[in-house]
Length: 446
Ligand SMILES: Cc1ncc(COP(=O)(O)O)c(C=O)c1O
Image 1 (cartoon, helix red, strand yellow):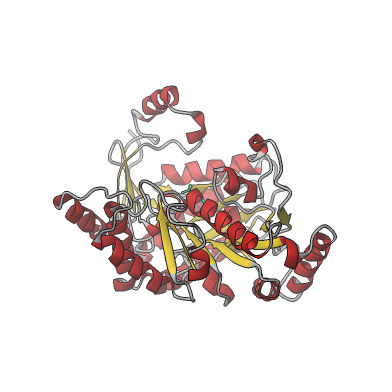
Image 2 (cartoon, rainbow, N blue to C red; image 1 turned 120 degrees about the vertical axis):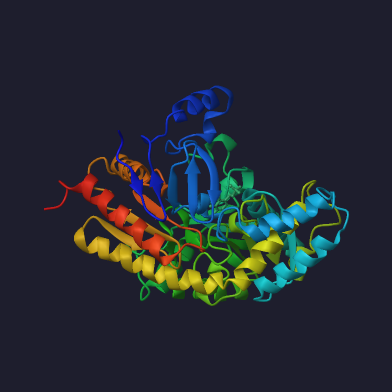
């Protein structure tokens, strides 16, 4: 007989992984590309608010939001209602033909974005949004000067799995398949907190640009800078002064600023968009994930002069802005506003970070805590032997105790529950993390 865990927020009554999970894994491995695999062994059957249920009916607290998608809670009732309205009206698809839902959603989206962003364009995947930003930046540059094609990106940042997205990402191994390096894409070092701090941040940027300026001229050769709002694997933000100085330099040299808000957008960090933490106004914002709350919606939001650069038909897609996507997108924004989820993310985020720092106090040299609002990471000391394997054990141990964490495959664990989570469930999850860290690292300290 397995140990039964029963609380208001969890129910674990079978062996974990639940009986039958391995059979699904084996079959799916037979028929699906292995590139889709690598997650911890749990087969989902349904998800509601901040809970995930597996195939046996075990109930877990979700600290992943399906990789920061379900910001408004899994199977959000308003999203379901709006989609059902479209279904009832026999309205599933419309290609690029206009419809009222699209009119309503785009207006709402642009207003929600604020910050001088005037127009949007909708797609389905996040990687399409970063591709579109790449295209817009280059079009903008070419309009000024034929060779103003340079795009500055960051080592270690990540923007998706299609060609331009992978070229902009700082993971060389993942983009090897492209077979060449676009000499107009320039990666500069990320200002990690262990390399610089707020005081030295401007100098850090100046040094990076000094090196770059030996090869290129910012004004003549660079059309855009692509920021990931925080570096994904570790939820690491840039120093404020770093981004503010970069924005000034961009303005001076007529360079566009794009933010990849895939993980940071839609209230995740305690602001509507993560870039707001830097007090700057980007020209282009790329969104996805939380934008559709579980339905495939992504988009680029930007200034009118940039968004209108492509000719009619040159930035559109068969599934763009279909009625189901617009219904979901609309429901997400209404839900954020009605339930004050941005503020909730800020307040509960403070509680989460305090809780993680309390755990850290028990293991002072083992990990540091990063992030803002309801996104957090625990970055562990890389020098601990087999650290990546040990973190996988923590994630699996937490799963066995009814908590899902993000396994990053690196020396970090990421935490990002739905913004609708209760304080009580957050507290319960923090306790599980503490116990799992204790179990796996009991011999590591002292
Ligand atoms: C920062 C960032 N950009 C882009 C993407 C790509 O989004 P998608 O997987 O929807 O293509 C992701 C996905 O994880 C992401 O985290």
